[in-house]
Length: 244
Image (cartoon, rainbow, N blue to C red; front, top):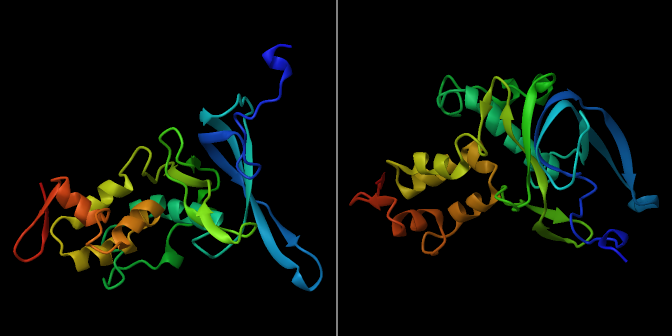
């Protein structure tokens, strides 16, 4: 019996993600449909959105993919700890690259409220770059999301956006979350850094970095401790960090 006659346990795909791992494509439409989970009094109603892309350019895939279109679906949610939330945070981080620091500062008179900024509806007919955060082959680490079947939080692969045509690029090809954190840390105290970093949309898209920033400063793996121990930053007598 040849190897081709056997089933394989390799290159398994997630039904909610599909075979692609990184691609660019033009966002064509976003149809929505109601769904119901469970039965009777315990039934839970939700809504799923399907993102439809055309004219795609496949950059990474786990199996041959030659179609010009690609779609994937997610349940809509206003929670950041959801696949839609992870997707949205990463998209907003790219879209917010077009605004000045003053426009992103809530206490500045030039502040632009999130509701007045560019949103996903404004991305229709634009080319987007997407990558699966699964921690494989150099891709971003998977976010920690709630798994209802296991009733616990666990690393969960999810789609993230790294590029919007004509707007910005971040993460995979632009400013990485770690680099953005280092830029913010320079010239700030620990408290000033924490406040600015946790509010930054680029950093918000990296769950692992957020965890390192929110660790106690005494922890060996906390972000600022690592910056000091690796010699990338120093701290002066006023507890202000300086990039080396």
